[in-house]
Image 1 (cartoon, one colour):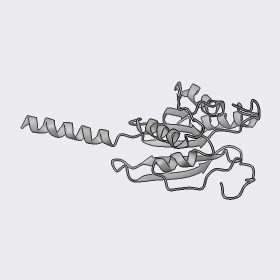
Image 2 (tube, helix red, strand yellow):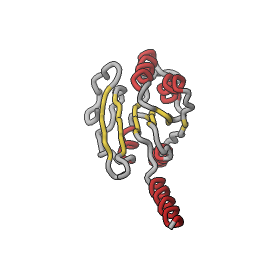
Image 3 (cartoon, rainbow, N blue to C red):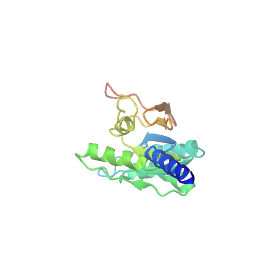
Length: 183
């Protein structure tokens, strides 16, 4: 009889491991960037202020992991929160022409977190695609002038097919979009 319970407990642990995922995922685009250097600009003064606001906003959100790209603007957006929480962000390289592979790598990094809250700092052309790959409905892409969007995703446990999604804003309002069809 004891062997039956041991096998049942082992099966339950394997089953819950298959559904391991973070408790919450927060996706943001990097904050406002400078124009120089053109290849890898730092944050502008407004971007630095937004990064500080993000850190203050998420200070008590239970962030246990942070994912960024190799670009300064994503790393600098996450830096104030990472320093405050003593977290070393995981950097996942975004390679030109390989958006799908990058998104898959980010999703795998997020799903590797068995609990806690994961902050993902991406780009205008990746945030909504990452959200969709994590189970969110297809949403309109972010505009080049959009920096204030926050997506808060909460996977329903133990049912990974269901997802709760909040789309919020933080910091100063964005400038009006210069292009149609984006948010």
